[in-house]
Length: 477
Image (cartoon, rainbow, N blue to C red; front, side, top):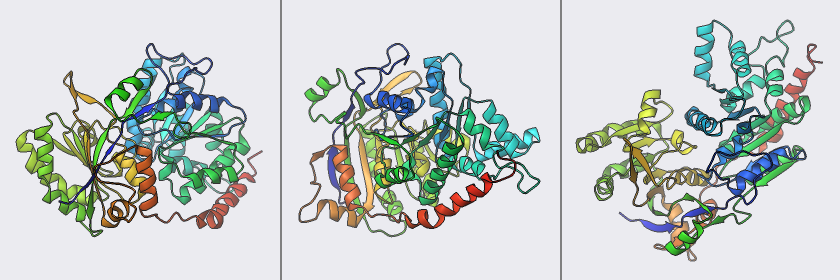
C-alpha cells in the first residue's frame, strides 16, 4: 500500500476576555472569543446577518443559542440533515438544563416525517400542524426545505378563495427573533437563492430579525451575495483574528492549555491514492481490512468511522465487516439516510460505524480513527473534522481515553500527485502542518464542483417575482 503521511497539529481556541453584558453562564463555564463576539454582533442594531466560521468542535452551536439561553429570544434553527437536527435537539436540551433560563424554552424538532405523523394523528392539515407546533415552541429545529416551502405557500390552500399567502409565515416570522442556518456551506445555488429571497421577505415584513450562518468551511462568494442583496453582514472568524494557536511541542501545549481551550487533537493522516473509478474505495477497504484489526488490537478501546459517498457501498460493506469483527467482540453499525432510528442510535455506541453524509454534516461521534472518501475540497475538510474532537468516551461509567488519532483519506490519485509529487509540492511526507494550511492546500488542489452561479440571475429573480405576486394578494395589507 502506497501512502503519503503527514501530521496535523492540535488546535486551541482563545477565551473571551470580557463577557457580553447580561450574559449568565453556569458555574465553571467560560466562553470562547468567537462565542462572545457572536452575541455582540447579534445585539448590534446595525448588523442583519452574522457569519460564524469557527472550526469544527469549537462550540458554534452554543454561540448560536446563547441569547436563547438567557430567556429573551426565540429561535428557528435549520439543519441540512434530519440526523443533525436530532443530534442538536439533544444538545440544546442539555444546554437548557445547564443554563436554566427563566422561561424554560420549549424545544420542538420538526421533520417531514414527523410533520406527516403529527397531522395524521391529530387529523389536521400539515399547515395547521406547523402552526400548532411552532406556536408551542421557543426553539424550533427543522430543515431548510420545510422553511422554504412554508414561505412559498406549500402548506396552505391556494387560489382566490384560499388562504392568505402569509397565513403561516406571517405569524412564524413575527414570533421568532433569530434564524439560524447551520452548515450553510452545503447549500447549493438554488438553496442559497431561496434563502436570500426568504430573508428579503422577512426583512420587508418584519423588523429587527437576525440571521446567523454557521460553517467551519465557509464560501466567500456566498457571503458576498448576501452583501449584494443589501444585508449588513458581520464575519466572526477566529482564524483571521489570530484566535487559534497550533502548538507543536508538549511544552507549548501545556503552556497554552492554562487559558486556551483545546478544540482538536493532533492527528496522523495518510493519503491513499486511488484510481477515480467505481468501487475503488470499497475494494481498498476489503483488501486492507488488516488495518482495522491492527487498530483495535494495538489501541484497545478504539472507536472508528468509515465515511463513504455511496449508500449502496455502505450497505454492501456492513455484512462484510460484521462477519469479520463481531467474532472478536466488536460491534459494527451504519448511519445513512436510509438507516432506521434505532440503527442510527446504535451507531453512536458502535466500535465501528459506516456512513455517508449523515455523519460528516455535524453529528458528533467520539472516535479516534477515521477512513473517508470525499468528492470535493469542502467535503474532505468537513469529514476530516469529525476526528480529534474528544479525548475519549464513557463506557458503562468508565472513561476510556484515546491514545492517538489516525485518519486515512481515500482520495483520487491526481490529488496526491498535486499535493505531494509536484515540482514544488505543498505537502511533504512526514512533515507537520496546522489545519488551516492543509485546508488551504486541499482547496487549491482538489477539483472544484460546478457551483451553478448562473442560477441566481436566471431563476433567483423568478423566485423574487413570485413572492411579489403573493404579496399583492387581496388579503395582505
